Length: 218
Image (cartoon, rainbow, N blue to C red; front, top):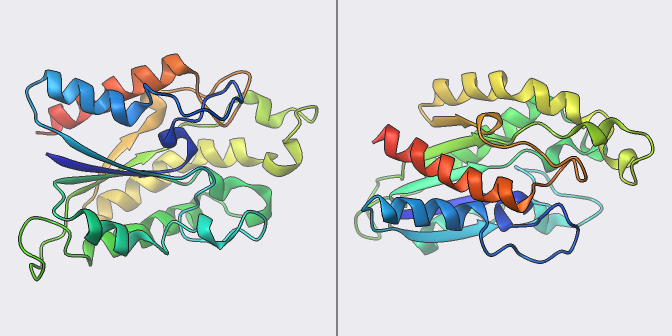
């Protein structure tokens, strides 16, 4: 089973300790480990970038943060794929983008359009089969994001409310698009010391939970 994970810093393995080191037991790695224990042969492809948005250039960090721009090339370079997991949208919540839940959902849908239009499923290079995709809604931001005393409050204020509004909007859009959907809030919480990122324990638990979701979906 060839699985591509397309995400941002939480999928890359950036922890709440601020060290900037990539956590060895990040959730995609743990997911693959659990699937292998269940008897599934897994090839994992991690395409995860801290700061990545759904489909918008970042005027501060750079155009390379735009998740839509490289997606088609990534899909084709890793073809054939059995499943694609997309977890993006958190960085779209930054104040400088001014995006609400509907706009973030539209950004995710633009990624799904590219995935559906790209022949990255099984078959030869000229095959027209796209790969199945599941969208994971990022869990809501932690309460520290609403604290004016937090160092990054100016960049993220108001984002927690947006993150809370996102799951039902994104779920409805995924259902309409025929994509799988997993609410990340069922399996992860943001850290009390970093409202954007997760603890090592959460990374480990999330990987196991996503593996169980995949197994349950068949």
